[in-house]
Amino acid sequence: MSIQTKIHDTADLVAQSAAQTIATLIRKKPNAVIGLATGSTPVKTYAELIHLHRENNLSFAKVTTFNLDEYWGLDGDHNQSYRHFMQDLFFNRIDICTWNTHVPNGKAVDPALEGKSFEAQIRASGGVDLWLLGIGHNGHIAFNEPGSTINSRTRQVDLTQTTIEANTRFFQNQDDVPRKAITAGIATILDARQILLLATGSAKANAIKQALQDQPTSQSPASFLQTHANCTFMLDKEAASQIA
Image (cartoon, rainbow, N blue to C red; front, side, top):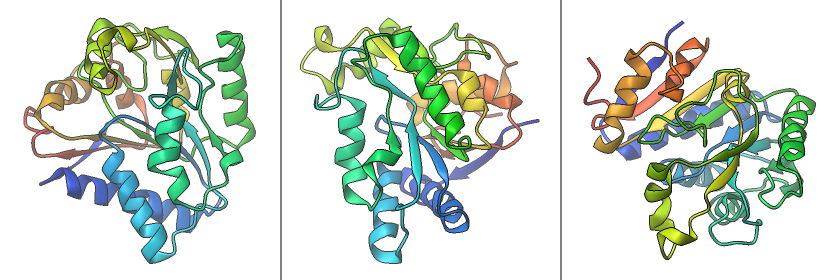
């Protein structure tokens, strides 16, 4: 198995291609189950999907979604929570049913039980048809930091200092950035029938090179995607610049 790569000239074209891939799935299967990511990279893809919804009658009314992760300690009303991110930038702008959108609960009483519940909800939905991913500078997918195993499942994790620093731009200062998160595991992601990873910009080039060309290793969690039967990396030229 190997990862398919599609290289586009610009980040805008990456977003358009990703949105069309998701739209094609929804039109073929209106009750599709889609895994979603947060962060800056997928924002343009969500904007494209909103456009397709408004201008081309793409309906999300029967779609179910699962988000990869949530900061531990933030409830869904916090303006830096991933639930708030998704509602503000995507869910509130399309015709999706709120009860069909699933984001881990960052204020759950028991994080272990929350992880098991999240996994059970995915199974009850019939499994994820397509999971949209980004990639961190250190090769993390979701909040599966280096050291995460291929058999990991939804759980509470400690964030690395590099991830905390990278996310500081979203908070008033670094001390406000949560130190823990609940994240879908690598095995949770690999269970999806299709995986679509987006990366744009030269800052992601080294992580992409390692994910595509190194042997699968826990030091580059994205490299485990090489073991998946249907995984595509959609990249702009800058993110693909180090690929041999």
